Length: 273
Length: 254
Image (cartoon, rainbow over all chains, first blue to last red; front, side, top):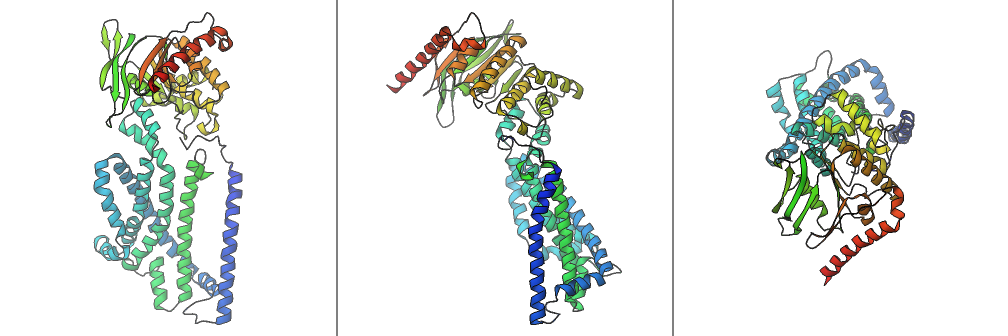
């Protein structure tokens, strides 16, 4: 029972906040240094603004287009979150089914793996055919790209359930459903959280790919359309600004998933220590 | 009502041809404390699993005798070598697990689990998680979980093998007092001849290659207390068990 053998104390919230700050400060410093190098290089070599805008020009574009960027972040974020949530439900359900049945696992897992290999951009136009123009295509795209990591993580987590505990449930005549709900699912949570963290970032990518092919410009446009429009207008600074906003949306979703995972695991699993 | 368990010529051969147990025969009286002792690979755990219905013999039978003939497997509980506690559940929720799986109402299972935890000396640790307990405390919780269903037959597979000597002595005393109090049949597996001699009414000595029974003893001491382990009569019985095991091992090497 590797998960409970060491005597460990529950980490207090304050120490975790302190450790999180200690983890963020170095990466923030690296980002600031890179931005300074980028700004310095642009000032020194003065490339065309169309090719590489200076970070300050990107910040300027962000401020200037903040309304459009905020609306884009909201639209793309909504599609990504909805797609992520659907992928989470589908992934955990399918992963549980595959873990429960060797027949299903042998039959479906290779197919799921194969489908994962199909490039999303290649099937994105089909999504427009099936889902029509608008947010549904972005959501479907987000689901497709993020469901596999959750499925694979759920399957791996459940299949690694401690055999001693499985025997304990058998000795106590637990039903198959009881074993799933009270043993296999909780046991797999650390693995599922890892899968969800990966899916969080992928869902934003999926939503934007869906927007490239299936969204349309209007009073308010999602990130994908904003990027395409900015490219057409030779506004590379706005492209960088939109990409930065998309990255922030992905980072925020990743952060929320990590926080939920930490809350679920902090009392009993080393990964949350 | 269970009167005795008859182990009749029980053998277990695995699919690869390995003979884990051969021709084991002895009786276990209902309400007794029987200990299976012997070195690794002598078939102790195999025999325990066969008695518990976790495995089936390839020859012979395990028969549960009642007053009116053979019975089905009695209400049986296990405690394993490892505590096997769910790390995300509190100690109380772990001990209540068998009742929860059996569909006992929440209030009743909390009451019964709390009472059992108090009985094994963990009354103040109910809200703790397994990761916050020492090895000895985890084994106490494991014993409490096994006993919370009030089993007729308790099977213990080297339950105290991983704890320190002092804790082990305390757990042996706890086991004996629980056995006396709850009037259940206990079958325990151990490597330790001292532990076997101390806790058992009946010691079944086993030897490997193939796993088999080589001797049986019924230690009987006038006064059973922790200081018994330091007495000459205890040392004499322990030496006798050790000698029988040694003779079987020497015979095997020849």
